[in-house]
Length: 272
Length: 272
DNA sequence: GCACTAAGTATCATTTATCATACAATAGGA
DNA sequence: TCCTATTGTATGATAAATGATACTTAGTGC
Image 1: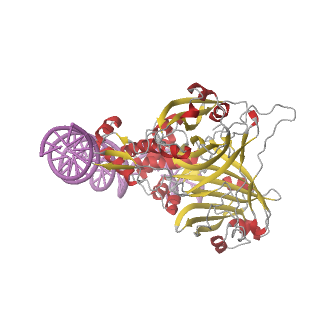
Image 2: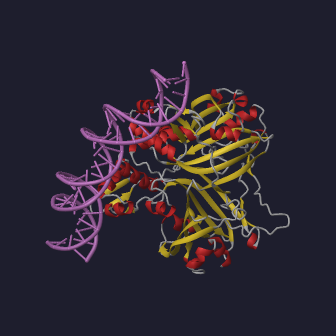
Image 3: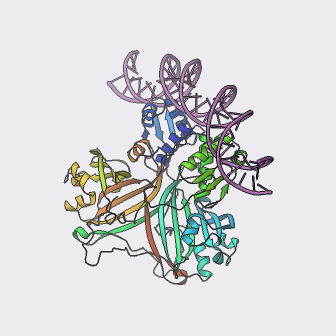
């Protein structure tokens, strides 16, 4: 997806409108406000709005006709994936589809920054840093940067990372994974990430930071994950618990359906 | 965090460098190449590089000294607000801080779009639509759009929405809130939202869509919430459960601390 | 102290983006 | 058929971004 639109304001408008469209905020067939109204709304001139609209048209997201206005002709792709909060994708196996991982980089770096702090290692230590992109049916949806303390990282090879979930590698290496903390946020796609995920620089991404601890409360994995929101989302159900003023939400127990006589799922490891 | 940098090329460089810094590719204390080298590397002039560096400096990610060069001084996140997955803010009461709600709009609109579909109402029905902004200590952090079926909406007044959580109003009106589904994603700030949250159009936002159902499985509230990621985030702990290949994650039971002899928290309603 | 390095400051030319404006063309409805 | 709404086209003015260049200032290390 070439980032053709160089003009800063036009590009900004383009990104906002496109986000509304692909996120489903405005649906197929809906009409956009006319160019003048958009210009007022965004505080730019009509010419600039047109630049943005032309780009959307070029990408077949909208259709424009004189006197008839501008309509959405984009239909959201049916293959939008969802994961529960633990990162387990829904229906992955049952839909007969497969995810693939591409290892973009794999090296050992001097500890520092958020990863080092989270893992509780000093400046002298080394961390294994791996960057991976996961795709479903050839379509990339997540960009993953992991840091693992060197002593653990050396127990597996780069190639393993392309084949197996990191968490599985850790446990296979004898790490007693006990708990994790997660934080979900949002950020913009930087050029490098954008290129890897096939999106435009400046697109919104879901950001997940997960720190995994072992039985001794030592950090064993620092995961920084970025997801395309049009391909991936976190979904979960909650039930109302308690009484009166003490009422609160509780998570719905995870639905782990296994066919009565069927095999259990191949793996409960999460597809980050 | 206002994205001030408008200049396209400078911004591009800025994004690349920032990504390197926050992703841990270059660590705390490390030195960046000098301005001339960066200029060559990125194929732009030194002036443009400076723009990018100035912005990074403004955000306290780097420190620049004559003859000494440019160093990374970024340290992992200072305290942002966090909520668990149910939207309950941590430490809100204990920190002696207060959230305030401003009601931006309140009206009844013809059903249509995602809200209508989620609530299972037809085109002829009316929905109550309310737009609110919640602030902590005067600083806005969330933009909330709620749709509620008319029959329920009429049981309370606009003013109530500025005082009490919507969920509480619903239950006070006799609605038997039973469960909810949530989806977390990311999107870009449109001008209206950006203005209300005090950020720049095109900034990334955390997006939450919650559909609340009553005991009879009817949709009673459709919440579309947008959060500033620099002020708010979703955080949750998980524990590893199960054995061998059947291992998976489970949510950590919510920590509901109540001082031994103290009162329970004022309210367990979520601060969305 | 001296040479060197790298950031700080200044200026002006050039290119690019944006705006304001006007008018043309087309479709749809009254 | 005429009126209106909306996109399509064109153009010149203005503002903003970028670049090229030169020079200054403050640390660094010998």
